[in-house]
Image (cartoon, helix red, strand yellow):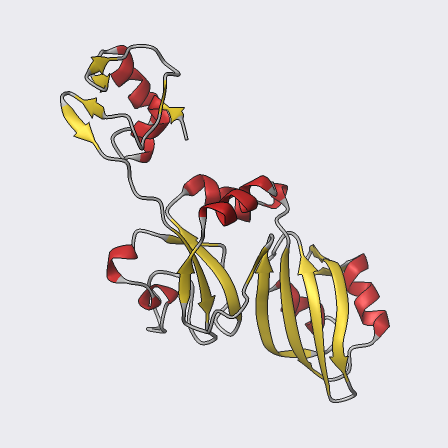
Length: 237
């Protein structure tokens, strides 16, 4: 896959894109031994040899990880209260990744980690509207009228909370299981929807992001995303 030379330099940590452009204009960058001064030159990081001031630059390995976050840990790298973090579940050499979005301490389910800023931005910024599915186990009875309210939208603390879709999986007077599909992902949005109806969520699991499903991945376990999965996530946008 070809990329612009200045983007490759930025991704490899050599310089910002703007500084990389100046490196090229100053004749400090060579591709396969030939000095390149043309901005916008495209290279193939897997086949071309790039050097700056005679030093060969290696492409930074991109990591894309799917993790089943267990309940009882946080998504921040460090916690001032000493609680476990999701980073403790990963190999030490993979600490260069960061979480793509968050799940709160009591929630579990699918979360991505990556060291690709563009990937993270596209999956978390509201303007891209990446859909996520959750299954909530709720104490009490959830009525069809409540589900309609969730999809119409509810105002809470000055914010409009809304599910794109809501369906009952099972229910009784004492306990209900509901699947919600969300778009924006506001802070504690799913829990706040139920709290607005006087109901408490006993368990909340994120089961899908875009077209990628949690599947059989066990709590605390991770896997790398395949190239086709990454392409699918980006294509969805």
